[in-house]
Length: 115
Image 1 (cartoon, rainbow, N blue to C red):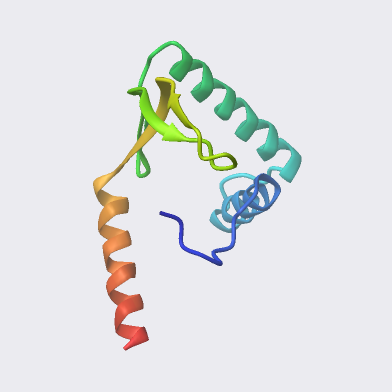
Image 2 (tube, rainbow, N blue to C red):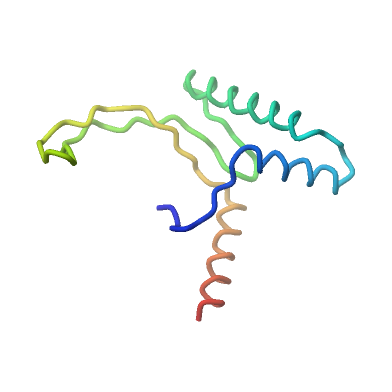
């Protein structure tokens, strides 16, 4: 469930952040446009892999897998009429252990600050 009022990082902002990180590390001096092209290529390859039924492992982030959702009963929100929601494929992200640990630490720190 998303956290309400949480800012979303969009591709151009993410590209700027990647450029800044690479420059601060002194490893590369790419442009935001070059990073955007790389991000688009990675996204296209992830899309292709999932369409072929392959899992995609992103170290430090998690594993993207293709899963099946069964058909299920539902209601039309406008009319209230009963309908069947068809079965579909969906992508699922199983979060890495390191990210899960960091998120737990963040939650504990946020709860401590809120108290």
